[in-house]
Amino acid sequence: MRALGVAIFVIGLCASAYGEGGPASPSSTPRHLLAGVRAFKAAHYEEALVELRVVARAKDAPDDLAFYLGPTLYKLGRYQEALGVFLGSHAERDTLTDFYLAQTYYRLALYRSARAAFADLRTRGLGPALDGAAARYVDEVDRGYAKIPEPVVVDVYIAQAFALSDGRLAAAYLEEARQIEELLPEPHRRDEIAWELARRYVALGDARARALLEPIAAGGGPHATEAADMLAKLP
Amino acid sequence: MLGISRAFPGMTAAHLEDEMRRFAWIVALLALAGTAAADDAHDEMAAALVAQADLHPAPLQLPTTAQAPQHAAPQSAVKRGIGPAAAQAAAHANEGRAQGQANAAAHQAQAAANAAAGQAQAEAAKERAKNHPHPPHPTH
Image 1 (cartoon, chains in turn red, blue):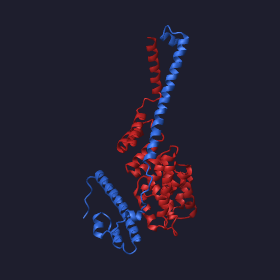
Image 2 (spheres, chains in turn red, purple):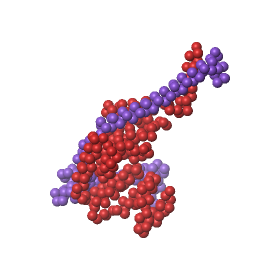
Image 3 (tube, chains in turn cyan, yellow):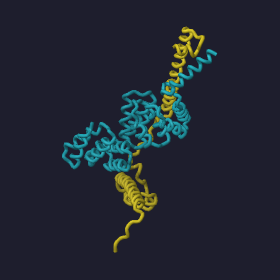
C-alpha cells in the first residue's frame, strides 16, 4: 500500500514536472524526430519530411532543426527549400550541416558559394571521406572557372535573383553574381549588384549590408542618398 | 514534510528520506533518458549524413551551358516555351557557340522574369476586377 502511495506521488510529481516543460517533456517531438531520422536512414525521404515537418511546427523543435530538415529537402531535390532552411537557421554551425549546405549551393549552380563553403569546411576539419569529397568539389569548381566566364553568366544569376521572391535566396544568387563578377577583367554590373545585395541584406537584418552601403553612400551615385539613409538606420 | 507524513501515515522520517532519494533518482533517470533520446537522434542522423553524402560532384555546368538549348532549331525552341531571342541565339550557335548559348540563357532567364511579371500583372488585374466588378463604360 505504501509503495502504491509513493508511486502515485512520484507519478504526480513527474506529471507536474512535464507540465512545466522539464527536460523529459511528454511532447511527441522527440518521437517524431527519431522517426524522421530513421526514415532518412532508410532513404525514405518523403516520410522523413513528413515527420520533420511535424517537429518543425512544435514549440519544442530543436534549435538545430536545419541539421535534419535541410539534408532531407536536399535528398528530395528540393534545393531552393533546402537552401532557405540552411540559411535561415540560427543554430550553432556544425560541419555536417555546412557540408550539405555546400552541396546544396553546388546543386543550385551557385558554384562560387559552394567552393567557398567547401574550402572553409576543409580548414575546419572533416573526416577523410568528406574531406576528399570537399577537395573534389573545390577542384571541379576551379576547373569550371579555369577560363574567365562570359559576362552574361553574371546576368543570368542577377536575372535569377530578380525572379525570386524570397529575399534570402535572392541574396544568395546576387552574392554568386558578385563573386563571379570579381573574376571578370571588366566588371559591368558591380554597382547594381552591390546596391541590390545591400537592399536585401538590410531587409534581412544581415550585418554585411554596412560594408556594401558605405561605398554606395560615399560614391555620390544615384543611390547615394538612399544608401546613406539606410546606413543611418542600421543598428 | 508534515503534509507528506499525513498523506502517508506510518512512514518515518528515515523512510521518507529514503523515498525522496529514490524519487530524485527517478527524475534524474527520466531527464537522462530524454537527453539520450535527443542524442540518439543526433548521432543517428550524423551517421546517416556521412553515409549518404554525395562524395563525387556532378560535372559542373555554368548556367550558360546548362540552360541554353544545345542544338535547337528556332521552331523547336519556341515549342518548348523558350523565347524567340533565345531561339535566335541557339540558331547562331555555330558561330561563337559559347556566346550564343550564354545569350540564350540570359534571354531565357529574362523571359522567365517577364513571365512572372506578366502573371503578377494579370493577378493584379483580376484583383482589381474583383474589387470593381462593374467598371464604367468607356465614354464615346
